[in-house]
Length: 93
Image 1: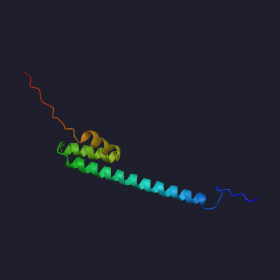
Image 2: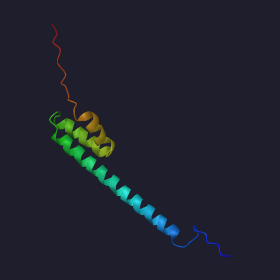
Image 3: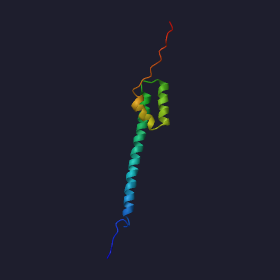
Image 4: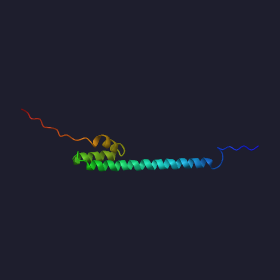
């Protein structure tokens, strides 16, 4: 009587491992491309913003360089629509 064990059949394990490796590779490349696109879009958006002067834009770009994923996310959620309001001098009467 011949018993065939499917798990020990040659070639089956390597095919599954190869398919998993390819799927992981495609996912990793897609995430990397998305992160790069988010970073570039965030830097360009910060540099084109009319809400900030040169110093404010430089700070945002430096934050995005320091935190390549978190920086652009914070920019799009919070920084893009905020404005810097100048301090009003108080006059002594």
